[in-house]
Image: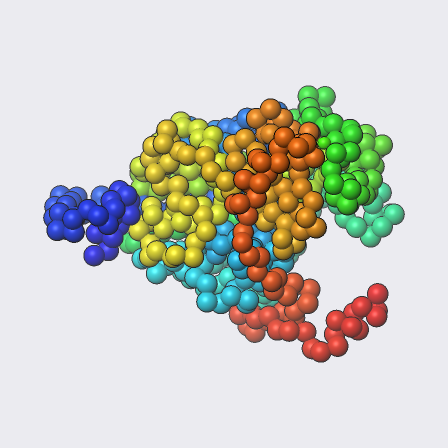
Length: 523
Ligand SMILES: [Ca+2]
Ligand SMILES: [Ca+2]
């Protein structure tokens, strides 16, 4: 029955197909090629804060990503893939639950498995579907208390201390190499002197410490897992912290980008003038704290170089995984998925960071390769990271989950020419706020009811907000129809909870009564 179920899902045979014929097909296929009809292995390669500045995508700036180019050549590149959240925590909660924040209430730092223990996350679905599940690194949000420990055959941490501290990712602590001096960047040092904040920190590290970096060590663990003998299909999730700040990367990756060759992204100075007033005020304030200072200090190219260097370092880790896969028995039966949780602004609309509903936060690399997936294909139709879970349900023959809010991309992966564009949802950090995106439009509706509209075909930089023009009212009315009908109330943010570690487990508790008031009074 398991083989039958897999055939049904993998080949997209609909229920109208006569059952008897299907059974005969299943049995003959089983007799002819039992070994071939095993579900595919999956390697999920996750990166953090990586925007679309990678070789396979059409961006004005490209990091050097030879290994991602190699993966794209053997698979499908989605050229208009949208994040499932505007920063790490909500994007990852949506990815693993297959549900948008508007359904789970996980709009910011909510812990979805505390608020909704009844939801069956992706790794549990895979394990129940017969998969051995291996995870390491930043798959979930990186602070302590975010790793959903259910459903893993093994979840690896770099140090034993992490396991009893609530499983933080701790990429830059506990023996990880750090620069001297620290902070290293001129911008961070100035910020530290003026405030107590650390931002835009970067540094080249000596090449010889690459082996000691957290991402390198976690990649090495994945390579060890690939070398094992596997008696059941496997899912391996490798979550890199790169290219999230701090951008510490070995010198050789910085050397790929001479400063005088760094191009700045297209930036329109008065770009925020046509935004709704409250939005303009908020983002213009953020602009003065970082963008204007970076500009004054003449450091933009240095910051960009460090980001590009970190992307090339992440790409090198992908290369190691691909090399290990190619040398393994799993070479021909493994799907590789490359994903980033969300993008990143480098000065566009005056922003250095994420959290926005604009394309710089929303557009992500999303590349799939493996058995049954078309090669050297580019898909311009709009998709979302929320589609990952339902796609795995179909490709891996997992039990259906009617609550999944994405759409399976399995047909598109087999036949990219059949891809159909659609309206995709990206929730903001506040309930009621969202973007609806398709191949032509980005429509933004903030929680306060103000709106923006961009024609991304004519205006790929999203400089001209068309929302105030009467002629676009009907376009917006139609896009508004794709908004969630209901926004779930947000669960408590992690700052309003208390993390309790108990050996290698942990749980979250409500803070004792009065704790919030005391904290407020102390401020
Ligand atoms: Ca992120
Ligand atoms: Ca504008």
